[in-house]
Length: 478
Image 1 (cartoon, rainbow, N blue to C red):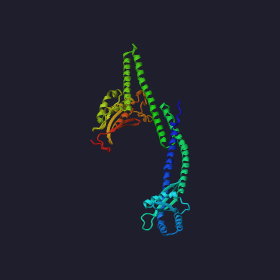
Image 2: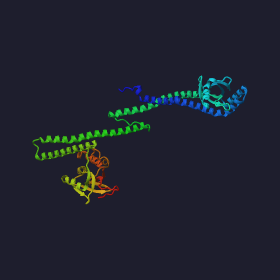
Image 3: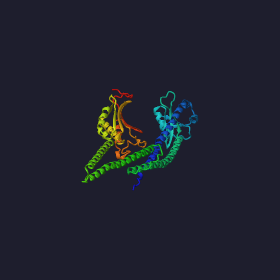
Image 4: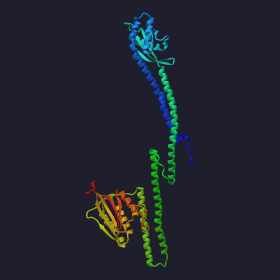
């Protein structure tokens, strides 16, 4: 029984937590970096605006401070400057390195907020601006020195102050909205991420379950391909893999069954003949016939063993090939000579139609000879006695061709597409069904192919191989 995964190892929970973490990090960056930077930018913008305003009123302020004899007139002017500049204006008087607020646009000036800046400008003698904080309140300030005519050091320091409370309020509102949006987004990410992850995990578990069933040899119906994403492609690949595995498994079972049958038949025959030969009353003619039949069954076993060995090497990829330039005409004459006794027993007319010029191909000589033996043996086995068999070779369109044809009844249309399948034979009593399968495999590994042309009164197997000296345009050169 399969135990459920712990919550920490569940794919759905992991993906949901990833979505949650991504949203949390994104809003944390906004809250702790973007919003404070926004506040700083707004405050600096206020400082720049104030710094541009200060020089506009400085000449008039200097004139009033140096010419007016009444403090009330100066106070009135300072108030008008404050109203015009939109800032609180405090004029600090300087005497013997001491500062005190002498004039202000407010009835009760906040001297603590501007004292430090005024003292700094008193020492430097230049306009200074910045953001100051006092009692938890932040303000933009700009201070300008005011000198008497001919004086080197400032006699007054005019400090312009604008409250930044509205900036703080705006930033505080943004922070609140960000927190609310963050909470909503995290909730949506957690719920939505979990739902999406759960759906993904469900599809993954479906694939996992199906894979285990296939691993146990239980092939199932194809899984539904309900998307075009990566999981959909994986599902499609899994279905294709299952089809291929099913074919391989079916071929394996059929191979074992057919091989067992092919081995069992001659073995049982040999056993039966051995028992018959033990009969002392058996006449010599019958004994000779039994020995001939036993020899035929032994040859059948030998051919089957060699064929099975060749197939195993082909499937394992350990079949060694030695490509070389081979004259197919010469090779056809040699192999045809080997079949003289068999042709004679079959009362067959074997004709060679070979050109005077060489038909050279790039191939493994022994494997091509093996293919030709298979084709000739196939023609003799599956045709009536007296059938004409023809072997021809030619060079056409850059390929070297070797054809074995017979004038027998032909291959039925229902069998034409299956003659190259392993263990398939239209007449099980006349062969194992491995020869043509091996021939095609060998041809493929030599960059060639075998084609079948069949009609009533004609069956032709043509082996096509790369020709020697092909110039790439289908024309050969010696």
